[in-house]
Image (cartoon, rainbow, N blue to C red):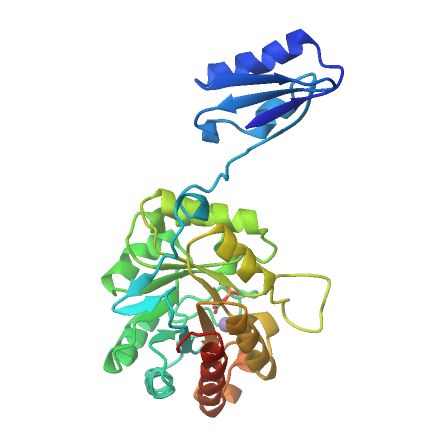
Length: 338
Ligand code: PEP
Ligand code: MN
């Protein structure tokens, strides 16, 4: 960390800063320029926070010089991480599409969806048993029974399952049902207790970006999971909230480039919750793959008109299959497979 002293800082003020750094067991390097004195803290600067210094008299500004996200950052881990989900590799050359309905409704609906997801060439399936709905009166998901329905449907087609965990008290049940990928939804990106608990498991985790989360907050949320020992983390950009109201959210494609630079972990895109309309999904999905996304999380439904949740944005089976074909074309153009 470096602490830049103001132009009129006194020697006592510089000494106070030095004293504070030493209190935390770090070494100090003082550089006295003609206009400013800069104090450098040498050692494990995770113990220090800019706020500890900014409040001291004479300090103009203090900042970290190494990234606060150690495990998920590329600084310390140069190669891309490839996550193995029951033999399906996410983060390698092959782009993975995770398809399925927003929510688990009935056994028939999930059986059909699983068949259609597999027929389209997908290797992973999504479906929500616990749904974070804006209204408490809306369908909240079938809960544990939904996990059982999902498991039965997906197992017939050997599809690993991706489903959202909202409450830490359900984690053991998720492990009992051997949920293959735990999704942490947008509304829980900074539920730090939940992040810590999934960090103690070895299950792959999809960490969706918070509604208005900065890249740095998102990376730090992933660091919470990683700090517990679970490094199988997949970032999922699903659109952020801006002034625009013409679509559900604004898909931040820039985040792909930024995360790829800052982190070694895979990045996937959810074009469904970004656009919020089925007709937008192909454009956003193709853009994301062209920009370097390692995968897509796409909502499809055997009969979108009858979907219990997010009906507007679900692709029908034909649209979904045809999207898989166009994704293949874009992926191949940039040297990847689907
Ligand atoms: C979902 O994937 O069904 C979902 C609720 O997504 P998000 O957390 O991105 O809103
Ligand atoms: Mn949804």
